[in-house]
Image 1: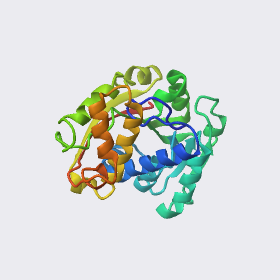
Image 2: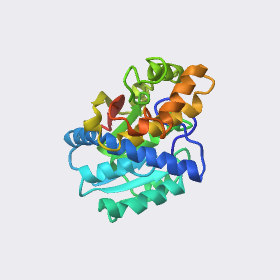
Image 3: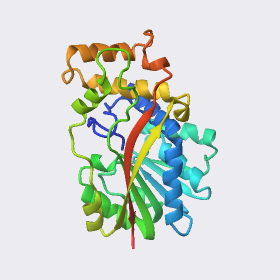
Image 4: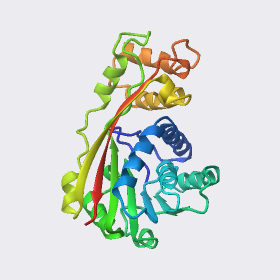
Length: 284
């Protein structure tokens, strides 16, 4: 299951071939730029789970960024990647050879909101990964109950949410009034933060909540940061027409125009500041 039209904590996703490709590319850029964060999170899971997972489930896998991170961290595990989009799963399968995990990642096209007969066929699982997906399901309580049933006793569920989009630009971006990106975020980020502790406990899990603050300068973010920032800001711009004044929209358009000297596409003063939260849920 991939993302839909909500703009809180992820990119609004319109269904369709072209948008699936663009969305997959942004997810891949996110994993590239935030590789150190993914390594930290999967390392934490490795420290908390015993024995080493043999069966791992990635719910709402998209193009497989979580699946590949899990396969790297747990080199003997078999990973099942589940998504609603056949195109996302096709892209994932194409990348398994690049990552050297063709024999360890299998894909399953399935709707998480429907019965889990097919998903459960590869279980029970030792570790289930659910990144930016739980808030999309029709009935989170039912989904968590099914997840509990598919975990072995002692297994872990990792539910992660992006609190909102990253910040990239300096306060004064050299275009328009200072504070443009802060105003864009304030206009777009109007929903309360996701909170899953109570529902996880009601499903039978014991829960540990871990916040992550990510701060990367341009060098730490790496060469993909310009494309990463451009893609996220362009997606925000597509939803901001009625939320920002004309001057801010014009300034944002300049920043997104690759032909402009101040464009996000080739700036060397970008950074990445974002926060994410993971609920690490143990099945007793």
